[in-house]
Image (cartoon, rainbow, N blue to C red; front, side, top):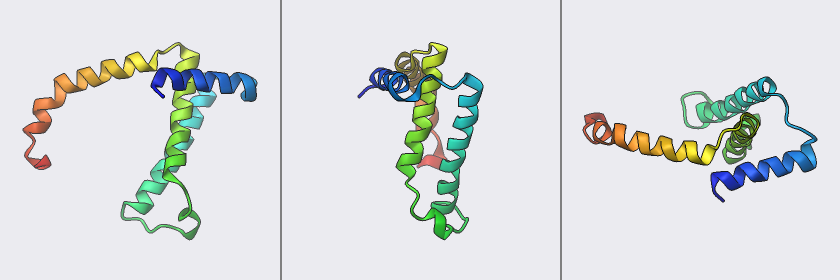
Length: 108
């Protein structure tokens, strides 16, 4: 599934199950909440914080998928072609960052 297909799948889901999109500000708040859940898992599982017993069964993939779902909602409701935007961003990053990263001694 490419990003365009994912946007279409989310739109179909919203229309069939979600009644309508939450407004953009509500979705932005939801995105912040979901990113916080990802951060909590990363900080405790891979960072220096100890992982609480209640967090040990949390699925990082599921939380990342929640972030992606809300990003796709925001793209849909604001008219963003995320597939095109992502491809453009990859091209920009390749042009801008290739030499910088290859010449970064910290990455060797």
